[in-house]
Each structure stands twice: as C-alpha cells, then as structure tokens.
Image (tube, helix red, strand yellow):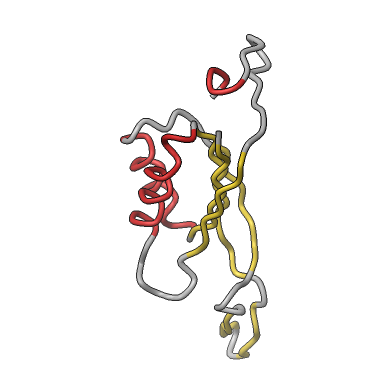
Length: 112
C-alpha cells in the first residue's frame, strides 16, 4: 500500500477530487495548510500598503491506495492540478505499512 500526500492550489481541489473519483479512488482526507517552497511566499497590497505573505495557502490531500493504483493516482493529481505556474504544489508517495478499518476490523488493502 502507498500513502500519497499532495499539496495543491485551493481552487484546484474540486477538479482534482472529480478526476480521482473518475479513476476509482474511494476516499481521501483533505486539510487546509499553509507553506512555502520555491515560491517563498509573495507580496500583497492591503489599503495601499505592500506587505509580504510568507506562507501560501494550499490544500493537502492524503490518499491511501493499493500499490498498483499509486502511479495512476499520482499522474492524475499532477495532470489535473497543473497550471504551469510557480506554486502548483508537490506530491509525495510513502510506503504504508498497515491500514485498519475501525468499523469492521479489515486490514491491508481490504481496509482501503
């Protein structure tokens, strides 16, 4: 199993979710986050004064999938979230040692 973590632009969330459901993803966790990378924040103007925003708002997706589905999920997120502008986000794939469905006690791929 793999845990896929992706940080994407907030306005891309619905489009990415729809694309993932279309390829058979059955669930995900979503968290509002702030961070910076290459972009290193940006500047904004508020009431005529310019100020620096150090952390950029993003959405973090966490998706647990069987090994065989991981590449397709990563490709789908990358294709759907891409705007070809700085700050499109990052995707991380992590080995997932164990999963357990609390309600039924199912483990491994069955728990996903």
